[in-house]
Length: 91
Image (spheres, one colour):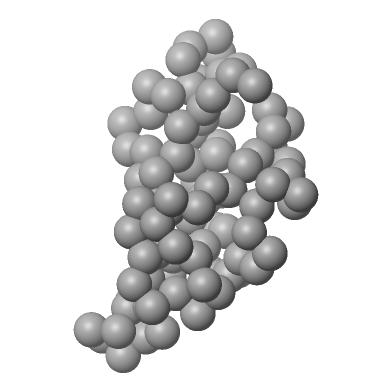
């Protein structure tokens, strides 16, 4: 997470969500709770990373590597908002 304001699931800056090379969320490595409103936007980024990976390109060479949850945030009457930045790493 690179930004978090009022997240109802308690996400904080610096927390990580870890996916394996098959796209599985590694549940033993991520925070206890994750809001469903973040997952659809993460899926878009995961697809872009996988497209590069499957075509022999660096998965980190996507045009946009940041996204956020659907919640509009406190300023617009929502619960809060988080912004995530995605990158592929060798493990």
